[in-house]
Length: 300
Image 1: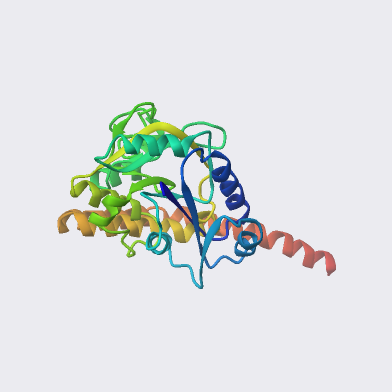
Image 2: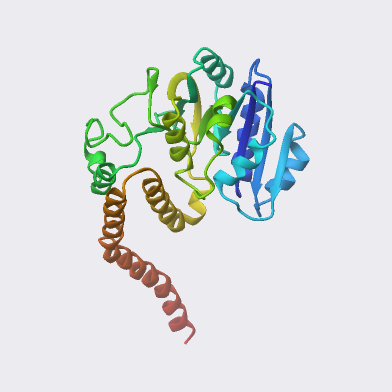
């Protein structure tokens, strides 16, 4: 079998259906299997899969085990020469899977391959990144990359200056679409389950590169990534989870001095935003209380 397509889902029923439809329609000549790991959804996702998707291997978790652990579950019995980690909020376009597999076959030194990822309006979505560092954290916290997106310095972390039009070796390929070579997984190991959500693909790519493998972007295929279908359901918690994952990566792979500086930057990042968040909370509370007060006055 060429590819085991693994999709982890948590309450993404509607977009998951569209994702699966695109996979079935656009796989081309690739011999594949689809494994969906459901992390205790409550929106009817499991029932939909059982009723409508006979070609899917379904793994039902009794609790949300996180992205890394769920992917590892599927990789334990996946049969493909490659494993494709695919987000449930993606749409596979044209002959993407066959083209990416063909690229990987002709580049045996590559462990991970990423493709072009588009927003819903077909604009380019940045999906290749540099590894976390104190400098990148500092630049990200200033938001100057939004003012100077084409700057190779301010936009360095997300490589915003690059139009993703050429084959390029990169640090990290985002986990919404990662084609990973089975041989490399057997050497390096599966994802680190300390990362619940965010950072697991960064850690994985780092370990592949450390063991002599390449992580490569190839504009050989395209997908649409709607983005945040699961994380939007608990945005504040996911923001904290992202920061925690960055710190975990730095603790694992850098010096204690860099980790200490990163902790300080993270604390300052949240501290300077407390007045703003309090203001938002007070505003929202007043918006909720005003109609209630008016209703009480009317009834009186």
